[in-house]
Amino acid sequence: MPDHLFYQSAVKLPTIARAQGVYAWDVDGKRYVDACSGAIVAQIGHGHPAVRAAMLDQLDKVAFAYRTQFENQPALDLAQRLVDLGGGRFDRVFFSSGGSESVESALKIARQYWVCRGEPQRKVFIARKPSYHGATMGALSMTSYTPLTQPFAPMFPLYPKVASPTQYRVPAGRSVAEHALACADELEAAILEAGAAHVAAFIAEPIGGASTGAEVPHAGYFSRIREICSRHGVLLILDEVMTGMGRTGRWFGYEHWDVRADIVCLAKGLGAGYYPVSAIMTRAEVTDPVLAAGGFQHGYTYAGNPLASATALAVIDVIEREGLVENAASTGAYLLQSLEQLASRHGFIGDVRGRGFLLAVEYVADRASKEPFAPALCFGDAITRAARDCGLIVYPRKSLMGETGDHTLIAPPLITTPAQCDEIVDLLDAACTAVQRTADAR
Image 1 (tube, one colour):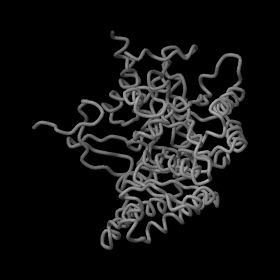
Image 2: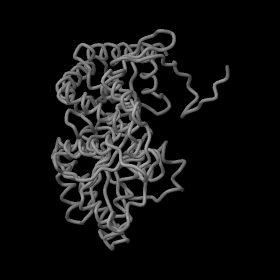
Image 3: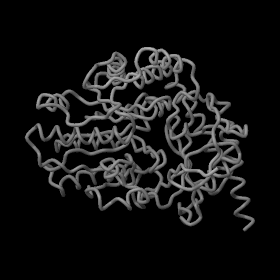
Image 4: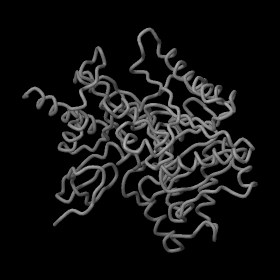
């Protein structure tokens, strides 16, 4: 039978039949450990009965209501729940369906805020390199990941990009702390070059996601970023699409440094893979001038969908009731330590990093120099294939602008136990051994 479906490549993959907890099975009965929550989405694992019950209950009431015609109680309740989880930092919530849409919404509310403030010249957005903020055109214009941006670069503005802070590849002569502050100071230089009166916002992930492989900035980085943004009147947008909803051992990644954002983007773990849902949280100071001036000129068909909202509420209930934020912190620390032990057994593992259940392993051709593997070797893809053969699903990307610097994200569901962490590490160990054996045989 011909295969009419296409995505990003022509690679033939196994067909999934069912999933439960941290495991999935294909149509041939082979079992896999989902060590990356799909695309860092399946926050509470697969097949949770409480979420199923909540979805069925909502289906028996109403699955869809359009936001210009009706309010719906699940959306109102979810907005309140998110504001409560934010600890009083935010006052308003806007819903959408996915991470890219969340980032688009953040960019547009920031832009319209400045228009309503009488500063329409503020149209410059600054982001980091490397970075990934989504696949839609506005989100892509914030992204610095060459394979994804290069074909479409003529179609969007070339906004300024500043260095992402790294604690792994620190330039010679700098300490980690000095490098973090130097990266932050690049933001100020970019603001001054563009003219502070022209800059609308700066966007960043609290902890790096796919584009940098769970890079955790030095503690001094975000306090300097916040000070720079405040001094120049620039809005700070934090992209928590991957880090939010407990993934890093806190409800939100910004809590690790108590950084005060103006807008926060949420997705992925909010619906945990059960139904598409995303959101931005922002302060009334940003939103209310826009609403008073005639409204936010933006929206999506499924914004505030009652089924999506009921699903997200059930997900949050599970995370709270089962102590999954705390488990991400404690068991994630155990998994990090286990991956560090794995690195001692494989010389091509150059770095292990991350927080909670957002971790990464970076591979290098030479550990001392941190030289990455040549792109032609597709080393990360080889690890991914070997892991799949062993029954382990991981998430491969490249840390250096998407061109090289192979890394594997290890981000299992927040329900993962220490014993399942051991299983993940053992299977990754087997995959690494298989790749090494193949390389030695050449």
